[in-house]
Image (cartoon, rainbow, N blue to C red):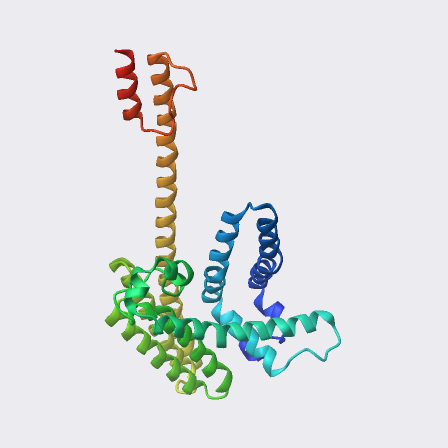
Length: 314
C-alpha cells in the first residue's frame, strides 16, 4: 500500500479531518440527543429541538458525510481489514481498528441499504412525500426526481469509487489493466451523465460533462506512462499536456465556485440593505404619524400600517 501513498493502516490517521466530523456526529447521537430527549420528557420543553436533531441526524447528516468522504471511508476500512491493529496493545490502535470497522460498515452495508430502500419506494412517494424527503433527500440532492435513473446519480457515484478502489488495490502489478479499467469505468459514467442528465439545471449537467471529459482525457494520458511508451523524454513531454488539462479543469471549477460565492454574498448584502431601508422607513412613519413604539405593529407590512394609521387619523 505504500505505492499508493498509505504508510500505515491506522484508520484515524487515514481519515484525517473526516474523523473529527465522525466524532462530532457520534457525540451528538450518543450524548446530546439522549440528554435532549430526557430533558424534553422531564420538563415538557425542547420538543422542537429534539425534532430538529432527529430529522437532521437520521439520516441527513450521516448520508451527506458518507457521500462527501466515501472514498476516504472505504479506503480506511479496507486497509484496517487487511491488517487490523487490535493486537498491537496500544489503545489508540484498538480505537483505530473499531473506527475502521465502522467505516467499512457504513460504506459496504449502510449506504447500499439506503439506496436499495430508496429504489424500492414508488416514484410517486419519492416526489410527493414530505416525510420521505426530509429523511432521505440527501440520496438524490440536487437531482431530478422524474425517474429512478435520475435519482440514481449518487448510487452511480458510489459504485464508481468502489470499482476504483477494487482495481487499485487488487491489480497493483498490472498498470495497463488498471488504466484500461479506469478508462472504461469513466466512459460508462460519462454515457450515463450525458444520456440521463440527472442534475436539476442544464448548467449543472454541462459542468458535470465537462468534468467527465477532463477525467477521461487525464486517464487517456495515463496510458502513456505505462510500458507501452518506453521513451522517458516522450513521457515527460506528454506530462505537460496532462498537467494543462488538470489545470484547466481546476481553474474552470474555481471560477464557478467564486461566481456562486460572490452571487450569494451579493444577495446577503441586498437583503440586509433592504432591512436597513425598512427600519429607516418605519422610523419615518412613526415620526410622521406621531406614534409611540408600542403603537406600531412591526409584524405587519408597511402598506397595511399606512392604511390603518391613515384611517385612524381621519
